[in-house]
Length: 406
Ligand code: GTR
Image (cartoon, rainbow, N blue to C red; front, side, top):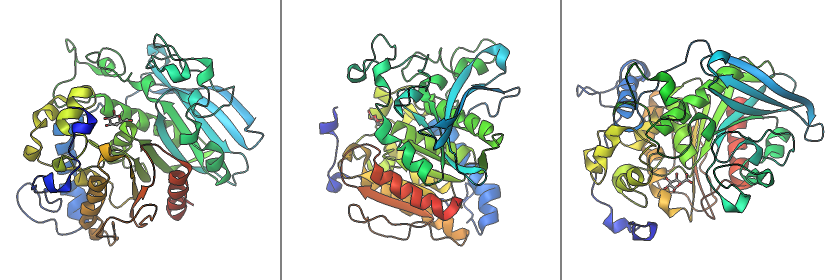
């Protein structure tokens, strides 16, 4: 089935029932915020681990950080740039990811920050010639000169419009980013490369059906980035927003769900397996995503291919796992594959959980018009244009972050 053959017709959306996030597994009602945090939230987190993203290994012991470069006068003197190697199991074991950080030079104290994974290597987020080029596997991409899974010099800055580094810096935010392929290359090799094998038990050769896939590994990597930021004197580790686009937006949501240290969570055009409700089966479906990207989710998720009605959860419960932290769900009008309406409905149906905390959640009952954001503890917009991250999106995310992180 190709994207054009997918369903985009609301009248063909099957009748579906969403699991009530406020009813416990034993049928009793969640009475208050405390019952949510102590009992229901862990139940839902476990559902997502068991059925969708899988369980990760948690924070590894013996992690070590090396500052491999530092320039205190980057971006024409406006920023401090650092590159940090995060050795997951200590230097001796070699396995590592490289995090690039820009910090506003004129910050009065530790800066609030955004962290997000990038698709093509740290050097693609800005033209800055001093950013080291990734040594990890990269997907072939003729447009930017990636061949034989090797990166190219000319790809520098090729994803700059998605990161808006100067804008972030001028608004007082640090930006930390990691190439997703440093954590797990984005192709299905049976989990031989990437971080999975580091944690296999003796004799294990691939994750069990309730263990992490690639999205789980990426989210785990974001937490390891946050481990460093908590120790970075020039960044405020208590004010770190996690942001991601598309497959990496699915990842930012899972990172926000599994790691409550993230103060604010942003999903941009995350679609199926991200913010969009699976049971609507609009655009990309569970069956389609599992066949195109069998490595992203866990083994159990395959049971729901063409069988969404059997899911004991839906993605509104993923958004609810952020409560009471602020969360922003962003769609794009031409990104029908990601089902913008399904993304909005997840945000909407997470709201009852926020209300337990005396917060609004998503106040709009109907989808807003194009470029008319609804801003509350759960915020939402549908931007004009295609599947992408743009200056418009960043302006909204920065305004949103200003309300909680300044
Ligand atoms: C598509 C995939 C989507 C989305 C997108 C992306 O091919 O079907 O789920 O993740 O890739 O990451 O850009």
